[in-house]
Length: 372
Image (cartoon, rainbow, N blue to C red; front, top):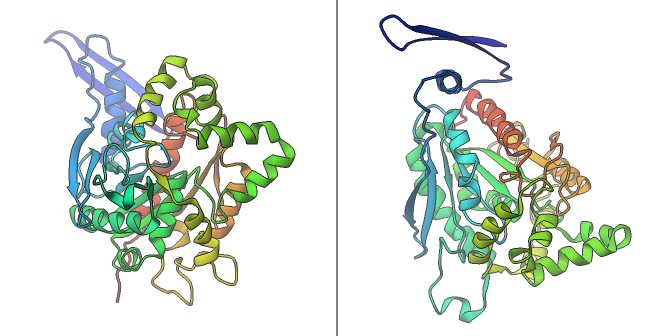
């Protein structure tokens, strides 16, 4: 518990003193104190409003020939690692910029949100993949290799945190299998992995089978919503699959406009199912091979991996979250009353962001590990 007192002189004869008591599980040093002071300032009558950090747009020219538009908030290169945010299917960098990125930056964690190939923020050439509107995993891996290489250089000694949501979590896990991903970890430049409402190591297939027996109508609605892309057009279906019950229709409609822009290209599902992490990167104990172990002393420390599930998520249920936590060997964080799109959830987005902030502080406080 921290008691913060701020004295503000408004005129020569008028001084206001306000006290704010905060409960902080962890802090990020002076930046956290400044954020608390800013929050207090907002409550003082007559004080100027505090401007949240701006989310700005920039472009990464990748070695793959793709121009990837990114969103950025906060300044990389300080004490805190930079969070690199990877969206899931039908989404784009915009989903992180709506609420999370200014919140993270105010509390000392800079972030960069990527647009995956095939979205409106990373368009493909007209003749891409012979007109087949699917993006192979190899292309996503090549894009991430180029993007993370550039961002790691910008971050300097503070390093990066790779954070994936939904299918973005699966893509992040596949990147950990790549030679360049392993090299970044070995060099201490990729310091943590966050998996938020992520597709588990076993894929979505086991949950789909469970739902066909337990809740067949819901399973059919969800499948139809994604296959037909109706979740990008119908408010009720979008709410069912992605958003929370309390979110106003108008807000969902605004997000659906973005979903429609980013749903043209998808993953090659048979390829994904043939290359699930449990098939390509699981050791005899059931854990990820890219984690630090006796056999892999330069792997990522499991304590630097965050697994988050959402209690009201119909796409990634509790069993799927447990599967992923077991694959890593950590305890998952479960957010109550939160839907799949936890970074947009009208009730739980702050709690979700706070879980990431707490994890970021733990990773930051751990000494960076360098290759011998």
